[in-house]
Length: 149
Ligand SMILES: CC(C)(COP(=O)(O)OP(=O)(O)OC[C@H]1O[C@@H](n2cnc3c(N)ncnc32)[C@H](O)[C@@H]1OP(=O)(O)O)[C@@H](O)C(=O)NCCC(=O)NCCS
Image (tube, rainbow, N blue to C red; front, side, top):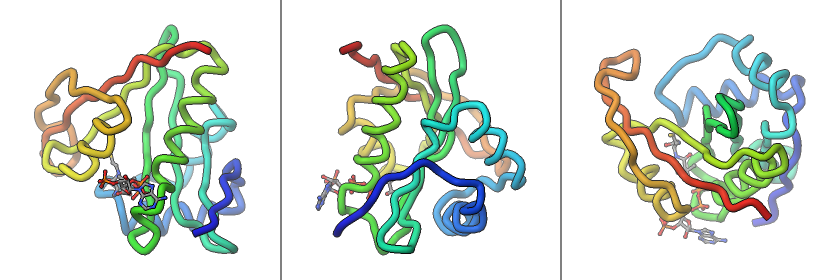
């Protein structure tokens, strides 16, 4: 499958909202995506398969040398083709460019598929956040130290 990775353009907001609705459990207001994009545009990446958005990743710089993945989703028909890996790799490269040394994220404790995906990419569980999500579910914090090149 040929996928092009590009910077998110605000004109694609509708597709981002659709992918979020179908693949992530939390709901966000439209302005949240635009705020995330404004604060770190080079790390808001979309994967395009022809004219269709297959997935996206976005995040923020959350502290001294620390970044956080806020959302990562690949739409079901496009999964297991390396798109999630591609999005994650570009995100980490962008983080390294701005001297980030640690990436952090939260994941539902029952989302074993995503936990395995992150472990495979070098992330380890660092803490448990009880009742982290709006529906009362718990989260794990996962972290990875980046090697500066
Ligand atoms: C987690 C998620 C982003 C992974 O995306 P993905 O595009 O399927 O990820 P990849 O294709 O890179 O990797 C998944 C699997 O495909 C395999 N794979 C990678 N590249 C491949 C390729 N070119 N061809 C075939 N398989 C490939 C990987 O080895 C991996 O296999 P594994 O299941 O044995 O680990 C996706 O499942 C998703 O959106 N889930 C729902 C939302 C979610 O949970 N997000 C995280 C919230 S914290």
